[in-house]
Length: 316
Image (cartoon, rainbow, N blue to C red; front, side, top):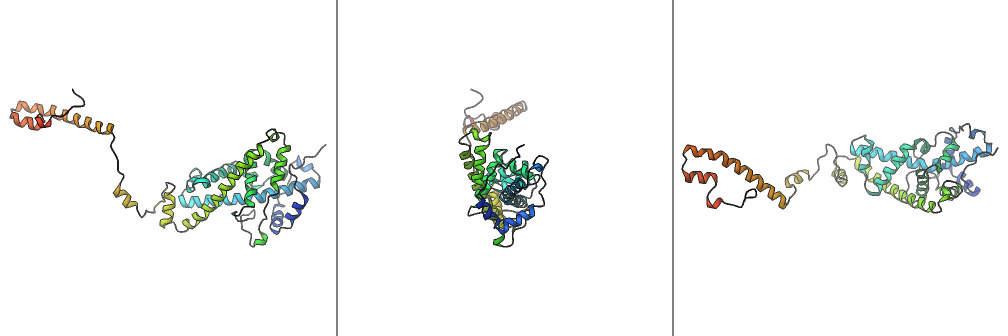
């Protein structure tokens, strides 16, 4: 019976380069605690299991910094907006950063176990090819690992590595392996343009995550002094207000107000309202005629004089 194999094929020289990284070795030692295979993959030989573990560790090294970034962004958004409603946290960001935050929120919520690399290592690796979201996040994370702006490398416990020598290395090795795996997969290989489409979407997500990193840096400095006008101005740009923090120009804006221009329909409705009031007034005042009020006084009060005659909108 043929044993299941990892869909990824990473060259030996790339594996040797990774094993020379102190940060990656520390990560592998930490993840070795979670090396329990399921019944299906537990029957694989030792060499196959070592391959599954290596590929799981590479995926973990790619995805966990993105998970850590999303958690930090969520915490900053909660502090800035003073809310724990997950559906409102996106309002703390704008543009590409908001789109990336929403995308990460959906993926990390639905696939939390895969993002954390928990469970059977072989199942974690094979799940990478299960949906477009998995593949897109994996490609974007690989692009981020080689980008000039990258999130701080972190351990699975969420603590930053102490020295640069312990930082995780760039991990572009997964891209050719992932492309080859897609070409060999019976589901994804039907579309010849699938790789270019996924790479384009992942590049957009990578750019959005970099924008999210930049906004987190700005938001962190603003949240540290929440009473400053900088935070109020930053939130107002997104159409938000910071609770209990009055804006410097709030009173000015209220006093000045907004200039409105009446339309022709609004002017006509105002005239109709005035005529309705006038008709009711005349109906009431006509009763005064029985009181034998002088005619010129009644005409002045009722507005029946020559100067008061205007074109009626309700009567011919």
